[in-house]
Image 1 (spheres, helix red, strand yellow):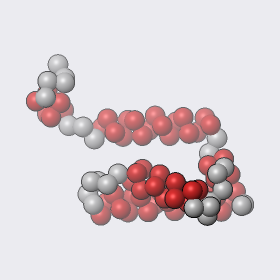
Image 2 (cartoon, rainbow, N blue to C red):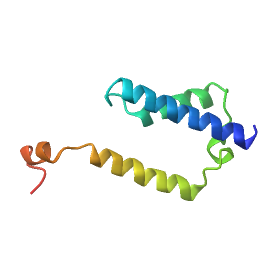
Image 3 (spheres, rainbow, N blue to C red):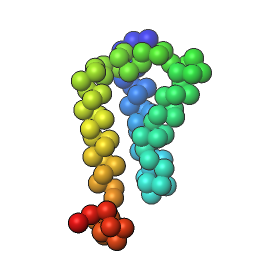
Image 4 (spheres, rainbow, N blue to C red):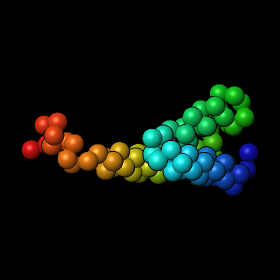
Length: 89
């Protein structure tokens, strides 16, 4: 598979995940849709197992993406609900 095609497929999966997330008002996270599509593609034999590397996402970039995901998950929590549950202060 050509690296540009792998990058396009990954970006299309991310865009589809964002679309689903917007339509469901973030009930379904975009990264969940991305990972499900990626999993089905690899397990179904439609995509190569090394599509992440082919798409140009190095190991350093995946570590940065993981930090972004964790920050995104943390920012989705409201401070009021954390205070109410006694998890803050």
